[in-house]
Image (cartoon, rainbow, N blue to C red; front, side):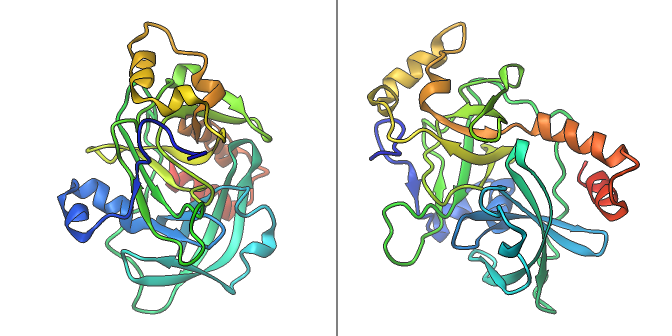
Amino acid sequence: EIYRVGDEWGRRVPSPERILALPIEEQTWLKRIGTVRRGTVFILGQAQGSWWALSNFHVFPQAEYCTGSQIVEFPLLQITARCVERFSHWATHDLALLRISFAPGQEPIALPLLQIPAAPLVTRGDWLATAGFGVAGHAGEIPFTLSRDDDCRAFSSTASDRPMGTYDVYSFAHACDVSSGDSGSPVWERDTGRWMGVVWGGFAPKDDLVQKSMELLRWLSLKEEEPKAWETLNFGVSLNAVRITWAAQAQDPNTPEELGRVLQELL
């Protein structure tokens, strides 16, 4: 209850039938998502001879959390990987770039390299979806859940991205249900599968106002953004800010050569 947005908790364990009913682009997203038991990670793809994944910096605050012995589980692919190295990180975007390794013959070759959209714009009212491994309320095995209800929408636009939280993460506000452990989950545009951001945090306990779907709809009906969205909802990393940072770093002569090449491919 302390995490809920709207009239109901929108996180659901997706049945095989539910997954197959989703657009192919969204099914592909679900295949990319894995857990490290502290949070969520997702596969970016293969570049420069290695496999890469992305998560939050606060899920991997120390390099020791990814040294080759840590297992990443991908339930829909029914495979595991090892977290080989926290290759780079950006505290101001709360992101960590991870080098991962699959056992021979288990590489998910059907997943193409995921690149940041050329114009990664979020518009207020966009229909969103996200999935991950929220640990809140689960004493045993952590389930894989999908958030795709009527409240899972953007409540700000790229034009109003702002720094939020401990690291001043440039963010957009959204009302998708997320809880502890969903950190590092991808956020995508419903139906098209367009990458929109990465879950990193939100306010808890939730204000009574945001636990009423009619109030959220009223906010979206307003001509201007409702300021309370920035005081009560959840937040995603702004890909617009990430793209600007990565592009500048890829061109910086002081950037390590391999990192520069990987960033170029991700752009």
